[in-house]
Length: 272
Ligand code: DGL
Image 1 (cartoon, helix red, strand yellow):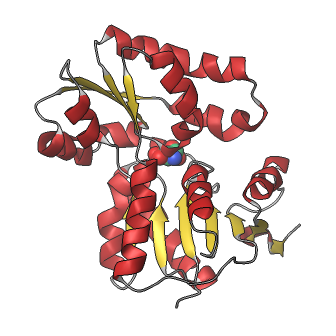
Image 2: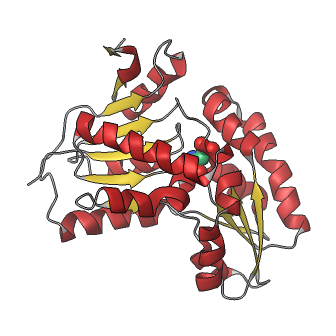
């Protein structure tokens, strides 16, 4: 029995779908979500920058929340810094989120797959490595969509169906033009638009993401390392946002959606 929390983190709200998905699956596990808004967006930074930001965030969070397992719910942080995290915190298990190239390549009949991510992710050697290892010889069109990250981070919570559809359409068009029949959502922010992507891409392009795979991986690690909380239901989780006051009203709304308590450690205030 281990009542320490699972920690999910991202540069912003991108990891929320993983965290809410896992809390539905396993309501007895205590959860903490951390949005590193102080350094958002990660996607425009260099690899070295992302590594140093993520390592110092992790140092801080490990003192603040003492997690038993960490989900790097951010493709940019995972492709850039997962190795450095594991090296720096050898006792802490990490689950990374990397673009689902393997199932997409296996599913592509055209042998052309698309990856949509941040600038940092699509240019990282990790992607080239995944493509080489699991790409099955498929041609890969990798595009960066920083505006879509901004849209999800700042607008999604108030956006209507038409706006959400409008945000994905230009990307579907571009991938269709390149002849791909399998599209990987390679940035966790885009999971909020998963249904829109699926609908607009259908019937000729299948859309892949890693959300269920990550929950399975968390369960496997908790069992393997005997870390389950073994509680029926925990109290409220914690939604940490770096960067201090003033708190955007959307933070409270996101925390409420998860049923978590908002914490702004840089403003010195909890539950403002
Ligand atoms: N959500 C992050 C990802 O999965 C990226 C957002 C950012 O650029 O900070 O890559």
